[in-house]
Amino acid sequence: MRLSQSFSKTTKTIPADEQATNAKLLIRAGFINKEMAGVYAYLPLGLRVIENIKTIVREEMNGLGASELLMSSLQPKETWEITGRWDDAVVDVWFKSKLKNGTDVGFGWSHEEALMVMISKFVKSYRDLPLSVYQFQTKLRNELRAKSGIMRGREFLMKDMYAFSRNQAELDEFYERSQQAYLRVYDRVGLGQDTFVTFASGGAFTQFSHEFQTVTASGEDKIYLDRAKRLAVNEEVYNDDVLKQLGLNKSDLEEVKSAEVGNIFNFGSAKGEQMDVYFTDEDGERKPVFLSSYGIGISRLMGVIAEHFNDERGLIWPEAIAPAKVYLIGIGGDKVAALGDELYNLLTGNGVAVIYDDRDVRPGEKFADADLMGIPWRIVINEETNTTGNYEVKGRTEKSPTFLNKQALIEKMSGAK
RNA sequence: CGGGGAUUGGCGCAGUUGGCUAGCGCGCCGCGUUUGGGACGCGGAGGUCGGAGGUUCGAGUCCUCUAUCCCCGACCA
Image (spheres, rainbow, N blue to C red):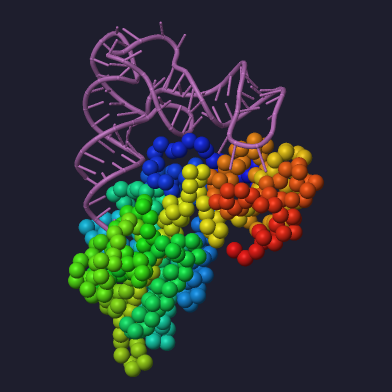
């Protein structure tokens, strides 16, 4: 990506209508654009981060044996009336509209009901199970109050997975494996150290659901954390009985602010019974399908990472999800252009994502933008590079650069992430 | 949805007790000098002050309504 041809621009001024760190930085660095409160567009750089996160999540979900699909945003009223969740008094985040012929439609804020209806067409026998599917979808929720930048919007990208099992044991087994897969996801995006499995409200069907909470000062949730056991309890279910039940000691817990980056639910057979989704088991009996669901807010995850990794100069992306691995700076105008082009092509040819700052601006501006965008590695070439053959390389958080020859540089940059 | 704050060129802001052609910084365009941490000089373009209504000789400044944005709270499968 050549910056001279890039679409977005960085800006020095902090947007006045944003308070959240993630939004301030992402807007300044040109990753997102605010369309209205709680609604953001993802610009080329921001989209790269989103896609990198999706790739990691996709790999882990595929590893569970789940298949990717894509549900519809427009939802028929009838689907949601089955469980009573069409009612605004029950679900207060619906966006609703009407077709030209007067038919009611809603915009999907979740897809459990929709998937149950769909799956009932395909699942008839125990031979059809177990089954799991997932999607990356834009969820639309008419929140009373949007806040915290991309961490809580009215329109956001979510990965939701649904698993259909024959019985509770089968469900539990998948649930457990999914939990491990989720932890790997947070690990891979750089949040592993600070992300904890958290007991939270289970809603109408079970006592607990499990959340994945990342400890961060900007979080909206409060959890009670046992660091040694790497377990936490959300304040919404925190009481003496629950602690006793979970075998946690009050004295081992610290109260911390955190951001929810995932939530998984065990519905047991309740949803299947409620929505009349049954299969015929081996023994010839008609039994309800067991459902569990698994969500990760992809755009929120990006926001949490932005909140988590930054300094006074800007963003600091973990390599695995950074929009590019290298920020290439040429100093010296036309005199180093050929050298810059050569290195750009060489790195790109080796599969390294590069942002090439080939703009005709002063060095300071390039350095500042490299830092603001939070690209992991910065390579600087100047007239001296031509004669010495040494390329200056500096990590985003490193104080001073090191120098490598071309061969070593290519090897270092194209090495495994 | 309750409470608080805000809205003036693309962005960030100033604008006295109502009073002349509405300013500043950044950004943008042109010319020149610059080139390792967001350079400098000169010359330009660009706003009718969120919207509607009202008070007044006169409204960015006062009043009413309204829209939008931010924050706190409530809410949050």
